[in-house]
Length: 322
Image 1 (cartoon, helix red, strand yellow):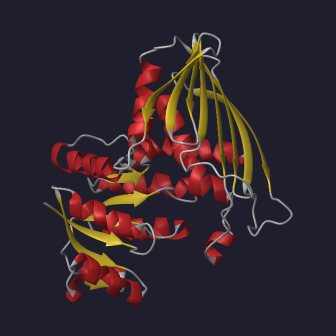
Image 2 (image 1 turned 30 degrees about the horizontal axis):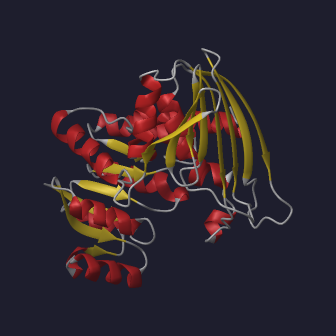
């Protein structure tokens, strides 16, 4: 059992607490958060004794009680928090996005390698069953070769905290990075060209652009078109987004009901071939599986820090900063 500390227990910290408690290879051993009130609340809910509820990371790491830390802090402190955890000799599962600076991500990868520790990034979308189903469909060429992908994501999502308000490219960092990571895992060939445009709506509460359009061209000429917005005042998409995959012999859609629909024979035949159930995995358990396999068996996780550098680099290309 890996003695596990969850760092940052508000918001997304709750699902991670539940995921750790539910996993047979991990023991929820401690919690850390700067907010004393939420720390007590989560501690009581999860059965963590007061001595294992830490108001500072220094206190938690200094106790020597933990083998693994799950980091669910705001994006802008991912780098210093993760550096401190790895420096203390503790394995780290870090929520996306990896870091806000590419050089910081590279530094953390080197630190983990030097200390022979596992650093995994919480890019959970590629592990969702609906995403795995589509990935296998593409690999199996069930409708022939892939030609293109169109995707859209839109909802009204204003900043919830001041540190979010000033974030660069918030929609990309907070949501589209999941879509980008999944895309990179399913595309048959590498991306060789990126075109992007960003916009801040005049009425936006964000300081930086929260609307983005980008096009990717792959080595095999597969084209990807993506539009994302945090400014939509109308109908919202699921967090997964809406997708259309165009193949030689038909299309594959992920619709607003989170169904996978196959459309063939020039649109005359439409079949629902996958539908998300109420008990659908959100991917945290699979990320913990990867962490366990890496610690025990030395198997590098699909979303290791080293491998996630590709996703982060693509995000910066979409930003237009590389």
